[in-house]
Image (cartoon, rainbow, N blue to C red; front, side, top):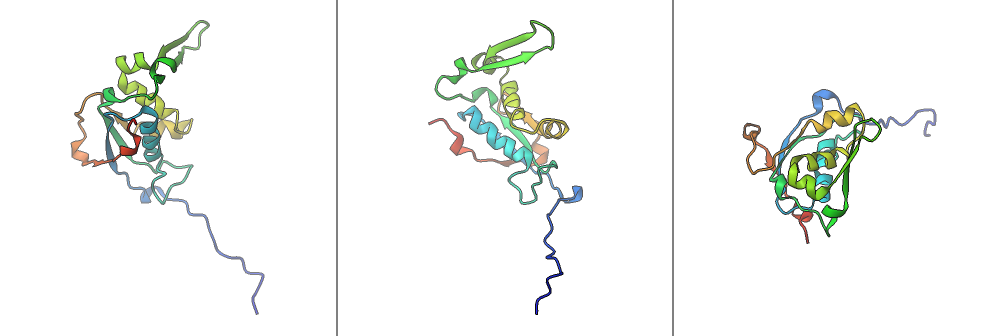
Length: 157
């Protein structure tokens, strides 16, 4: 006879801070589409690629993006899409096209796009600190022995 008073002991797993291991990944952004690159980078920063992912914790890895100045946008979106900044004062809304921002500060274009895909608040601010973006092919993080992320699916067609 089966006892019905016993509960099944299925519990939700929540990772402990000591169980989280942070890896390092490097991405070469040359010829990659901005949005497709940023979605993959945001996924790794959040930790969604790990089996211990928890939405309330930072379980993600560090990501290094090199050759940010060679990233592309699809179908002429660089001239159409706008980037906005607001100072908080009346008349303080500034806007510029992505083409101008990619020309002027390509690292900021990637950083801003990834930040918009992360959670808002203290958790998202903690995650964005693990993103390192460099306009050229060199980066100072060779001591961390980063693994190369293959994003060939994010290339422009």
